[in-house]
Amino acid sequence: MSFAFGFYEIFSYAIPGFVYILVANGFLQLLKFPHVKLGQVPATLGFIVLTAILSYLAGHLVDPIAYRWYLLFNRQKEDEKAIASLKEQYPELNFEFKASDRRTLYSFIKHKNLALAEYLTKFNAISMLLQNLSLGLVLFTLTQAAYIFITGQALRYSLGTLLGLLFSFVAIKQSAQFKSWYTQGIFGQALHYGTSVEKMFKEEWPVEKTPAPTRKPRARTKASASKTSKPRTTKKKAI
Image 1 (cartoon, helix red, strand yellow):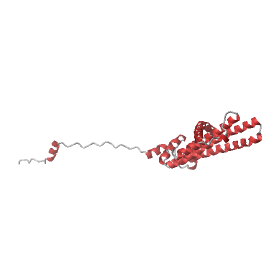
Image 2 (cartoon, one colour; image 1 turned 135 degrees about the horizontal axis):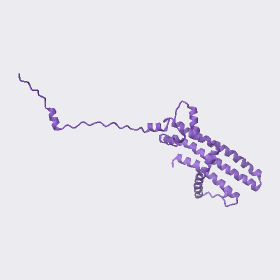
Image 3 (cartoon, helix red, strand yellow; image 1 turned 180 degrees about the vertical axis):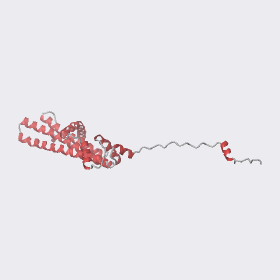
Image 4 (cartoon, rainbow, N blue to C red; image 1 turned 135 degrees about the vertical axis):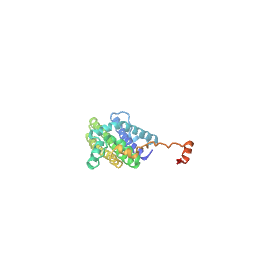
């Protein structure tokens, strides 16, 4: 496992999944269902590995919901925003990138410069972490609100409710910022290799033109060789 792969998987899925598990455990405690008491968690290697696996799976399962939550606050897609921003900053560059080219451009950058691709991937991983954290904080806020409704202790749980909403909003905005750096980095760095996907691949792997077939010289036979080897003699006319 490379460092980039581990960084991406941990920040994009494992940490958010652990937050979701904590929130779900709080709901179970609220409903007085069987739950894990945090003060009595066994610090064994097996329990830690099991928690890591469950966190990773939970992060994958809830990530599509977190992305829908992200789109509620960011309706314009980041790919289109990145292209519009580049055209505004560099109007003299007549590039022909489309929003659907992002994955292809990222693959090209990864082929040319692996370190740069890993650097850009970190922005995307942090963006996914923050959007999942924002959704997790909203769920935590709902838990705190339910505690207020059930126990009637508004002063005890209102602070957690307000802080959860505040940090959820901050997290979703920061997620959009990191996503913007990720997409703008891809389209911006791709300009170093060409102004369109077609030109980039033609310069990287040019099409070799096959030369026109040339006619081979005919092989000389012994008969033709003997004819050409004999000197020509001219007959003198008799006077």
